[in-house]
Amino acid sequence: MTIFIVPDDFPTVQAVIDNVVPPILVSGDSIEVRAGMFPSFVLPDEDQNVDPLERVRIAGCGIGRTIFFGGASDGVVIDGSPQTYLKDFTVQGYSGSGVLLQVGPNLSGDNCVIENVEATFNEVGFDIQTDDNTLVNNIATSNATGEGDGFEISGSTNFLKGNTSKENTTGYHVSGILNRLANNVAKENTEDGFLLDDSGSITILDGNTALKNNIGINCQTDNNRIVENKVCNNTTIGIALVGAEGAEPNGNRVDWNIVRGNGTMGQPDNAGIFVIDGAGTVEPNSITFNKLKLNEDFSILDGAGLATPNIYNGNVCTDNPSSPMEACDPGIN
Figure 1 (cartoon, one colour):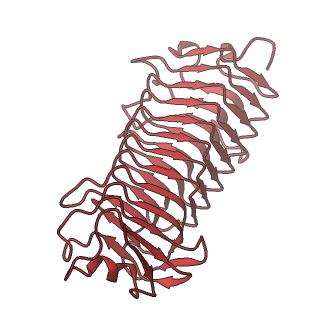
Figure 2 (cartoon, one colour):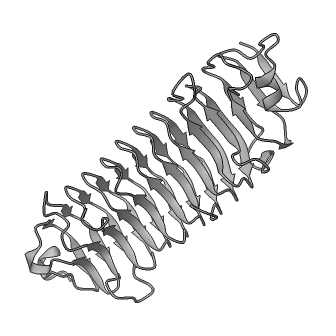
């Protein structure tokens, strides 16, 4: 294994990647980047390095110290290099994605690890189009132009833990299948904290915090598990089961969440948990053992009312009623 130092050995990361006569960067090598500001890079550069590269480690000196600064459409691009490890830097000011994992011409670019990386002032912070990646302790802030997603997950079977998404348009936008998000924070995003859109399904959200977004968790699709999250002080709805027209959510489990102080804007249909009319008609949604307090106007609001096909059990609601009343344990509203 060889370690290359930027800018001591080469002026940029891309210069290491593009040095192919002889090819000095091989699978298993590391690139360490000192403090400073550097341009974007693509690994591998398909115009220069046609051989697949695996297990390459690229590490900076820390968030705010090593900075890849805007100028190209995307910042740090992993173009089909599996098991790449990215750590300890900031990606800032790109008109596209700050960090992009995509399928390359030779390999699929799966099984990458991104740890302690900040993406700020890009169109999208982290754009994950491949599978089986792990994102731990990363930060996405102020990615609010265009799509404005802090984390955009269109690949499958990815795992996100301990990340923070703040002041973006959407905090976490999940459209792939079989992804899991655990112990992440979505705070002060102008639209959704967590969006499970109607092109994906079978996502697990557990132990996350959604705070002061427009909608805390917006579930538009089927067969997801939303468990033990804290969903507080979002301006309209805490947890929404509201799919695209004609594709209302079915078969979701919304269990053991703390849902508090949502609906601060005072608009119609504000609620701690809102279930649109038609949701659950194919397979009932199960909404059980949630603790709801100080939500406006309803603790739980099901658009189908007494005709709801959904299952409610053990929900504890204080300060505000539910509709239908059976959605909360009797006498605890």
